[in-house]
Image (cartoon, rainbow, N blue to C red):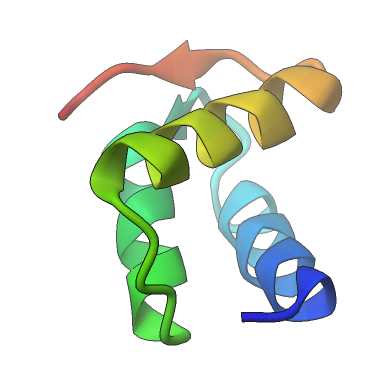
Length: 61
């Protein structure tokens, strides 16, 4: 997974719903583009990505 793929997948997730960002949905979006990193790492990436964009995070694991 390239950085560009990662960013596009998560930007699409944020654009699809203006509410809190679902960690579960973010991990699923990254898995859909072929990410093989451990769940904990992906959860951290999704949370950090959302926080950097000042979006609320929904911890719905």
